[in-house]
Every structure is written in structure tokens, then in C-alpha cells.
Image (cartoon, one colour):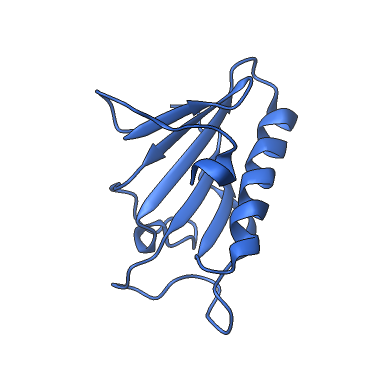
Length: 120
């Protein structure tokens, strides 16, 4: 994980995130479990882990570039189901292990979804 993110993840004592990192102007929060459900056709409930990114200066382009970079590094491994999602509303890209469906099957261990800056 740290290799894909390009930095060390630090444990978070309070809040929904379990780990966080500063990616040089963009904050990353990693939730190892979550309560998201399927929404707008995106099966968030099939992913165990959610990683959210926010640019500290509000630069959406830099934020998206950071998320795409991390997504692409993880997708190159061809081991995980991934969904790069903007604002929990629109799928930008997906990746899956070879010869597998786009989204992970229900009730099976799955891995990661990215969320670019949600306004919480």
C-alpha cells in the first residue's frame, strides 16, 4: 500500500479513517471498513476498503491526478478490484483481476475503491 501511495500511512486515532497520509498537498484517508451501500449503480458495499483523497488547497485537478496515479499503480498489479469514483457519484475507471467481472461479486472479499474529494 505504502508503495502505491508513495508515502508512509499513519494510524488515525479518531474518526472514520484508519490511516492517513500527506501526499504532498493532497490528503489521503484509508478506511479498512465502511458502511457504504450500493448507490447510483456503484456497488460500494462489495469493496472492503475505501481510500479518499482531498487536495488541501481545493485543486480538483491535482486531486484527480493523484487519485489516478494511485489507481494506475494498483491496477498494474492486476490483483485487486478497483473503482476510481468522483464524489461517490461517477465511476471514472475500474480494474479487476484477470478474467474477472468489472465489480467484485457480492459477499466475497474485495479490495479498494477511490473517492475523489467528497464534500463531507
